[in-house]
Amino acid sequence: MIIESSAPTRVDLAGGTIDIPPLFLFHEGAATVNFAVSLLAKCRIETRDDNRIILESVDRGVKFDTTLEQIADLKNESRLELLSKLVYFFKPKVGFNMITESEAPAGAGLAGSSTLNIACIGALNKLVGDRYPPERFIPIAANVECQVIKVPTGFQDYYSAQYGGVASIHFRPDGIEREALDIDTKTLQERILVCYTGEPRNSGTNNWEITKRHIDGDRELFDIFEGIRDTSLHLRSALLQNDWDSVGEILRDSYPERKRLSPHITTPQMDKLIDKALNNGAIAARICGAGGGGCIAFFCENGRKPDVETTLAEEKGVEVLDWKLSVDGLAVNIS
Image 1 (spheres, rainbow, N blue to C red):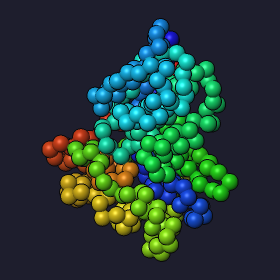
Image 2 (image 1 turned 90 degrees about the horizontal axis):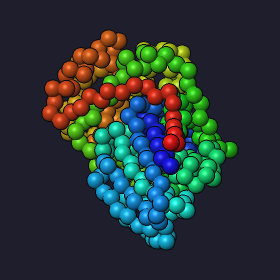
Image 3 (image 1 turned 90 degrees about the vertical axis):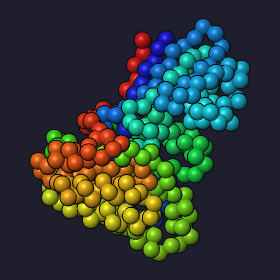
Image 4 (image 1 turned 60 degrees about the vertical axis):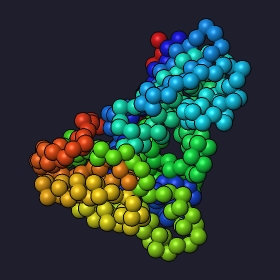
């Protein structure tokens, strides 16, 4: 049996970091806005006739094997730690080869690891006979990833990976709700450019330090998060109204507030690219993920996206990503 799964990465437009528990509980109306893109994370599982388990990451160039009898050892395996912990969690009863790869650049800030997490869960769950319904995938992904990074994880990335499309994720005491946003996606694609800076994400915002400061009662940080929440809600409304002038203004005004979270959210290279883009047709810059490298999304003036692309492509190491909106989320196929 061959199982192939894929899930889309995402560009986050508003609300990053507020999706980490328990931070959203302190900001009534907490929400994020993101959209899924066609840069996929993929997982392929092929069953074997023996008891061997072979795990391989194409992107990281790491491959190792174990056996069904040694599956308990994967709980503390440091090589391909996320894959190892997922296999340990599902505990398949047959041998298999598992190969993963991602179409997004390494360290891009496009939720590559969270997306791969969902893709692997979809494939492994099929391998063990659909043990869990799809609504359980996101809690499993968040909990296993927390075991890997050893701090609480944000939730928004799993929703874009599992469901695709443009969405606002709402965080409330009674649970998390995904709201699909019915917007003019053609304009979204015509006016947003995503570029990889050539620098893998290195530091950016330290989410655990921010979480601790927030819980310790840092008033300035609390106010920043109130602004992050408000930006998300305002952006959601503007997108639903297809008010693209307001979208540009909201994204432009949110950038300096986002930088208040950490002095490391941009690098000198990123600052240079942002300045060039803003001087050649971009209205606003959005640092993808935690920053400190990775990708930048630019909201461009109407008709100026090609100009921004041209000026950024002149910079050494910079890659303007070819993306399309991914309306579909997790896909699992068996042959």
